[in-house]
View (cartoon, rainbow, N blue to C red):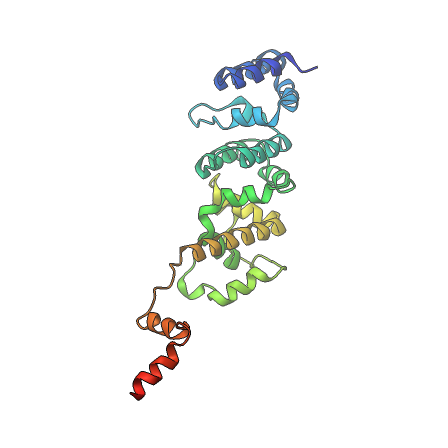
Length: 249
């Protein structure tokens, strides 16, 4: 049987009162401690946990976001991708509030998400607007390089097709990109989860190519196209013979 706090929180969530639901769960910390809340969150449906996590407010830290485990987090975020309206800013805020909180290892949360079906798609959604910087980082290990250091486009395409990825030596260190945001997540993904990083990069590269192809306008008809087309179209039966006879007359 579900814990009374879970029953109460779920009813409040379904009634649209997310703040009251979070308060009901937070009361457990005061009465039974952090461990009790973590156990109760295991009983909470991922969609209900997601409803609370989505209400993240930097000015009001959420006890739930502070205690959610990597597995619970991954299951909730997958629900976000499956059923919620896509909002990259909200996704980033929600992810950042959980995996970059104090006293946790962000890599455990990244690994838990990467192991899930659609987990790499979620990471690609999170990094969707940063493809250019990530492409530079993939090739150089840094987010900013000079034009002379950039990889030519054809070589970059070859790299996308290569299944063997290895981050270039050197580049920026973690302390230089520890922003609690997309740069740190990219660095951790590439250095600590290189296979997953490369798959995410391939997803982003494919999305970029598809967007570029969709943005190319249809080729306008050139002068003479209509005449050439008309010459190729057969005329009415007998038209050719009639024209020759008229010319002879």
